[in-house]
Length: 251
Image (cartoon, rainbow, N blue to C red):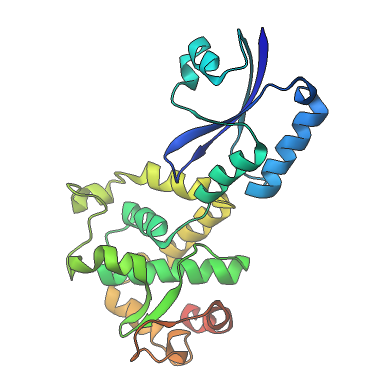
């Protein structure tokens, strides 16, 4: 018989569950397991969601684990904490589109208002927590700050309400359809709970404000946007500018 100590999580990048299967006898003790768990948390964050399982099968092969319990079927197996961490860590980094999807699950938005809400979510989190909400850069366009991936994805919506997925009506958005997967995506990210809390606070502050007013807020004298030449394409609004001047948009 072979003992398997299994550490599991999910990879949003691959869309699969991921397991670290530990079968080496010298690692099957509390001290060694604690060190492996510590390495994963150092790589992925202390709040990384992990589950652990201890089972016995007829061999050390991963196939024997799936044969023993169907729960493990379809799980991607890794054999090192480094490989496991790399798969998980990649999925714990948010994008602007991740935040846009969550916003769309909560608020009816035009493309213009969505861009502003994604920006405000980023700026609020940066100023309150001194960390980046997502990896995308912020650019100064004519009508205010823009995240390029969000712009390219939703620009064809024009002045109409944006639909988060094909076939979902504006009424469905109000009812919270598709909120759970969008919320789960935020929570899975590194520091996900505080990021979700911050985004919700942003939506409470700006979510019901008309798009035209949101533009006026970003165009206030002294705002981060006002310090960048928006007449030129893709001029970045740096984190430093946001940290120094976002207070103008909050007054």
